[in-house]
Amino acid sequence: MTTSWTREDEMSTQPWTDHPRTTTAGHRRILPRTLAAGVAVVALVLTASCSSGGDAASPSSAASTSAAAAELEAGAPGAGSGSGSSGVAGDVAIGPPPEADRPAAMVAAEPTSEPAPAPAATASGGLITAVATGTASGTPDIATVSLGVQTTAASAQAALDDNNQRATDLLAVLRDQGVAPADVQTSQVSVSPTYDQNGDAITGYQVTNMVTATVRPLSSTGALLDAVTRSAGDAVRVHGIGLSIDDDTQLRAQARADAVAQARTQAEQLAEAAGVTLGAVHAVTEGATGGSWPREVAMAASAEAAMPIVPGSAQVAVQVQVSFEIG
Image 1 (cartoon, one colour):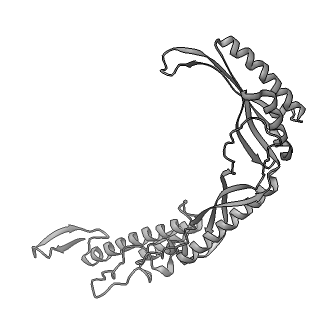
Image 2: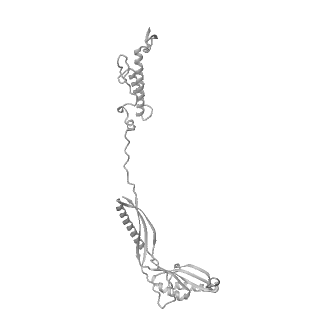
Image 3: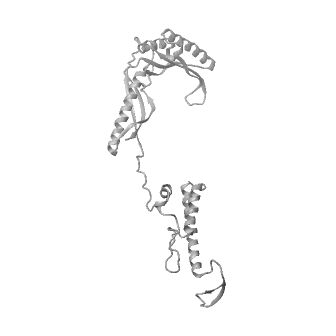
């Protein structure tokens, strides 16, 4: 059987071979339904892929997808029913399925119109650093004496021989006065020429031999100096006496505690002025320490009585740097 087909744009009649899809109504009905079915199949495949975590679809998902496609091809509800005499399919939405039909993980992963709020700012945790010096005083109980002999002669050898004899006598006196060998140490030895008033001609040679002695107890220092002077005569030289405390462990501990307490007071004042709260100690560093030393004492010839040595007081100082955390 031959069917006439009318082209709407040319309004002419041409012969057309009979075919299941050659009727005008069938031609217009089948294509929209096929397109809608293809779009729905793609959407369902995407949904199945998302719900399975990106892996291949499971057999059940594939079966449900095939059933849905067959249902759409047959014109079942959900594929869009024809409207009017032409039987054209209804509107087909192209894109992801509605939120109600999508997995929760897929919906949560989608970007939102508003960014997530930033985390609350936290305190930086700064530091307050204070430097303080603590002191503690005590009574000296030892003396460190720098003493020796100095001789002069026309020749260097003569000056050296005389100096050697006097230095030997001086060391003997130190031993007799109870100074231990470990507390005596040579500190200077020199041989140098002497000149006339114009500084042109050598008139002789001068030899100096100095030792440093630690005297214990301090109260015996005066008698020791008198004995050394009588032994060495005018050749004796005393360059200085230092008074100190033999064991200053307790005083130094007191000075440290005083320094840390002062540093804390300073830090509290700084924290109050800055309007912050003083926290725990972060670090403590001990700096330079020191004590007091007496001035140099010039020695004369021997006297009738022992030279008086006044101990006075000695001060131990400790400097610390303390860092405190803020609040």
